[in-house]
Image (cartoon, rainbow over all chains, first blue to last red; front, side):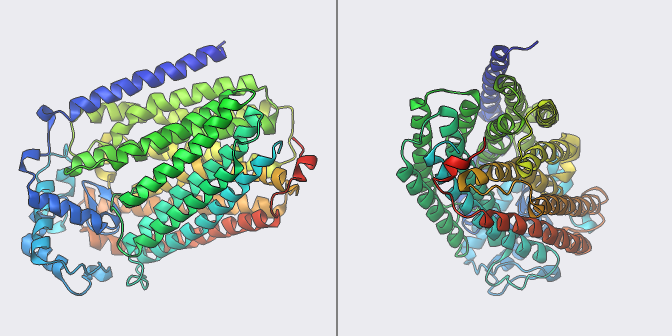
Length: 144
Length: 447
């Protein structure tokens, strides 16, 4: 029968071993050779776009790479799906955008800010998502 | 209650109840918005309601865990808390930081990273607050007359939770890296170290409620938390399937996520077996309901429903849909909310001296809250599966078209949430009826 000492060894040993494997896998998968995000193409404009994405909590409604609020559309491939002009118009709109009765906050962004957001979406849209990009893109029924 | 300083736990539990009530209000705002009724949009848009709803959950659970620690550690270490005054300072500062964050969310003041929306300056205050809390607990434990496994596991859980908050404060230009390390906080909290906290509280309650020998319970506690880490740490990989990192996570995450239900199954079997084995029948039936209920519902919500969409082949379709909300609600309820309710139900009569051990209101609270939450889970599940098929598999509708189609399920959700909230209201009434803690309770405590 298992003793308490053996149970403790199982806990401590298992934890240490799995944690070390986890760290090893993290280092491996984040190494430059394994990059799937085209990090070299991440422009200053896209970085400013990410900042706007965060400071306006866009993730509170939308999802990106499948992460977010499930209340508004997935934006991973939004540039491909909607085009730059459409996205900028929504972001710069002085009144709440209201597709299918569901309202979006009117962020009233400047042209430069809207362009930064588009650059951010473009960078996201080119990431290799291990096949998820084929599920969420194209989302619209007329592009299946 | 054996030590006067344990009374401080009451106020952490009271803060938990207050924040939980607010969390429900914001949950209803979101439910109505999903059902097409977003009349509050101009004042509380959905992203505000969501940030408030999820952050209140985290803060009220943390407040509950801290209260549990302040109650359990003195009894396990057989010593008074080293400083009750500092514990009150910690409580007040926790409440102030929480309120500041929640108010800020209404004025577009946040970081906008799911679950970690709290802005950076407040992050630093959280760190100071948690350092103070850990200082009180660790010094008490260090000075204590004994160091039990239950206390050590609980303290390890709290310490690791504090340390794992730090990766969430790293800044990255890349959304991929941002997301990668955000899961170090969120996943390794809820599917890792929080389970240590849950295990520690569960162990304490089973020792008190069943009378089974401490050595037996603590031995199995080690096995369960061992299984938790064995599966949960590498199970983090299921969050890395589709966020732009190596495919190796599809294999590692898939295998170890499939093992995660085992830890919850072990916990459920452990709790039920200890109850059946126990010869001591503690009169506090309500605490027993919540304790055993927590172990069983966490297995269903976190274990089974997590497994239902955790394999890569399934998750590629369910990732980023309402299916996640289905799993999330029952998992958090079973594993963490119910265990906080259990320790409150156990400790409240001991702190106040009023022994409402088996009231009909207490039983009603348990059943209504659980039936309501299961109903909510079903409503989320039906809506989520419909969304997956219409939008992702058949691709017959766009996101917004699907949202209109599934609005009806959110009406069902609101009805079930009303049932759930009725149960919570009854629980809070029971909490208030117990009155405030008193030193005289020391004399009438029946351990």
